[in-house]
Amino acid sequence: MENKHQNLIKANYSTLVKKMMAIRVAEHLYASNIITDEMRQQIEAEKTSYDQNRKLISIILRRGSRAFMGLRVALMKANQADLSRLLMNNDDDTKSEYEKKLAMARSLVIPTKEIRDSRNESKKATHQQSQEPRCRIGLDDLNDLFLTAMSFKGTLYVHIRHLTESHGRLIATKKGVTFTLARWLKFESLLPDIQDFIDNVGREDGEVQWHIGGGVFVSLSSGYPTVDIRHFWKPDDAPEPIPTKKGVTLNTNKLARLRDALIEIHECVPELQDTELCMFSDSHQNQIGMLNCTECTPFGYDDEDNRSMECNVGDLQDTEPIESDLD
Image 1 (cartoon, rainbow, N blue to C red):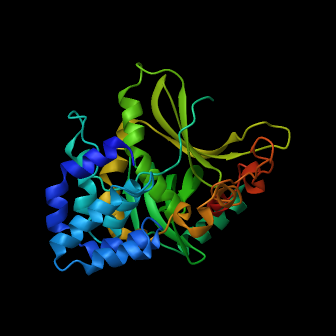
Image 2 (cartoon, one colour):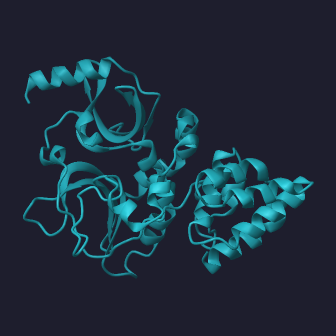
C-alpha cells in the first residue's frame, strides 16, 4: 500500500475504529480477495467491535496495493459510504463541498500518456417507448445531454447521451456512451484523477488516457479542459486502437453536474452496491487471467508485445441503434 493511502487511513483512524462495521466490511474484503479467510476469522475473534475494527485496520495496512481501493469499495458495499468518503484525498482545499463528499472506489487501471432514415428513427422510437428510464438527470442548460439509467434485454445500464425530442418524447441519439454497472463504477473511481488533471491544465504537457472496460476509454488533453469518453476499435492494420464516433465530450460545467448527480444515480441504481469488478476475481490474480479477460483486454493480445490483435466489430459502424454500443 502506498504511503499516502496509509496516511489517509491513519489520519481517520479514530473515526474508523469507532464507526466501522468490521464484520460486514471484512466479508466484502474476503469476497474481493483482499484478505484471507484466516484474517477474517482473526477479526471476528475479537470480543468488541472496537477491537475488531482495530484488527481490521492493522491487517489492511499490511496488505498490498489493492488493499486501499478494496477497503473503500467494501465500506460502500457495507452501507458506510460516509466512511468511504473519509478516505478521499482532500489535500486540494479549493475543491467544492460536493467533490469532497463523493464516495467511490479508485480503479487500479494505470493511466497511459501519448497518444437511416425515417424507418430507423421509427424503430428507435418504438424501442424507447418499450422501456422507461429509472432516472434521467440533465447535464446541461439546453436539456440536451442526460445521465440516465435504463434496462435493455433485462440488463441495467447507465448512459451519458444526447437526447432529441420526437413526437413529444425524448429519443436517444447515437451521440453518447453506455456503461455496464462495473464500467460506471470504474469511471466514478477516476473522477478525482480527472478533476486533478483538469485543475492542472496548462501546467502539464501531453495527454492522459484511462481504460474503463471493453472498448471504452477516457481521454484528456493538456490543451483542453474537457473529458472525452469514447468507444475505440482496432483495425487489423493499426498498431493501436483508434476512436470511433460513439462517445461524448464533457466540459467542466457538465462534469460538475455529473459529479453532483452521483448520489442520485446510486439511489436510483442500488445494484451498484453489489456490483463486482472483474479485477477482484480469482481469475485476475495473475497476468494471464487479465490478458484473457475481454473486459480488461478487449482487443486480444500478442505474446510478443501484448498489443491488441482483434477488434470489436460492432464499433466499426457509427449508425447503430443505442443498444449496439453495449459491446
